[in-house]
Image 1 (cartoon, rainbow, N blue to C red):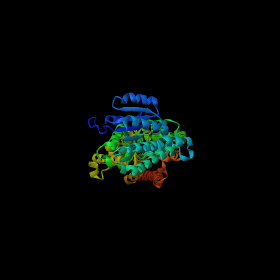
Image 2: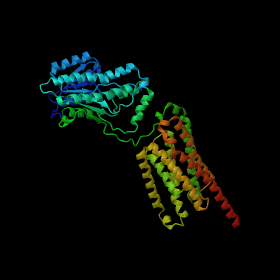
Image 3: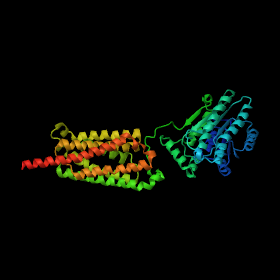
Image 4: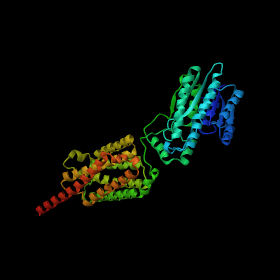
Length: 498
């Protein structure tokens, strides 16, 4: 609202917990809207600093008081009556966090302290405010309770925030027809003083992790305190808002699926961190195996004027490297290094394939003449497929599942290519073993993650994942057997020629 419109002119507003953060922003917005603003906060030092800033904006009163004290709140109401004769708007903003303790581990002192500030105090202030509002010649008023849509972890905090929603609906139902409205703003995840302090303090580890689990499926946009403050002004005295009563308004930009959610290795549970070196060793061995395979394919392709990897599998694999090395890079430094080196070497493999593919497709003139176009179309198709899967599942799952898909395509494509060509040019046991080894060492890597970091790797117990592992072992084992037979036939033909 602009200062000229003065939507809250001649109205009196009480904001609790207004010395900083969201409360300070709400007080500022009401001052700019022309209201008489009383801010109550227990932190006298911070309140004094805020008072110096906000007193310049309009009619501002700062009261250092404990909102859990009934006597202190009675004195505050008498002061409001003496200075402003009545109260028009109450914003129950003050709140404290718990340590995310679940009910079985909850300390009773913490329970009473959290409920006293987050639920009992808003009830007491609402009681006093309603009485003042009803004493007007034309009863009216607005109460705004700050609730939370993220209150699903700590037993004390969760109970208090769900309780304040019940208080909101009860107040609205009883006093709505008397001109007094009561609504709640269910705030999403906001990085403010309370939440920041809560995560830095001594928290219940499982409870804190539960909070992270609950928000990991959403991608909340930041809610700026100034925008929330403007909403409070509009809700209390803006045009059309007089129809809104007993509502719980979600202030979180709406839920959105966290499509870009990834697992941060630094946030792994302690059990996994103790064996992380083993998993990293597997990743390193994978990188060594595939590096040897890529170098071997480049050398073999140039030596024999052919290409080593089937074209469709090559395009799928190259698109995978592009997607997870450049577009969605994540993981440890080791994992990123493996992806980058794989991408660079894959460029060499791609070059030899484009250069030598026409020699292998003399039996298909249409393919032979348009090899480059086929490569471009396949790369575009596979890259868009990897990106679409990442957008659907998130990069973590998409990277894993598409890697299994690439491996399956490599195994099937390599086997079919070997059998259809009828020769072993571009193939060798060294190439087979380096590829097989590079993929096989990820099995113990995945076992470690599933065993010690199961929460984010449950998919590894799925039938589809187990099928991928089995089919990979079967196909790559069959490739080695078929390569032995193809080479035997080549030797037999050579003997017959002699």
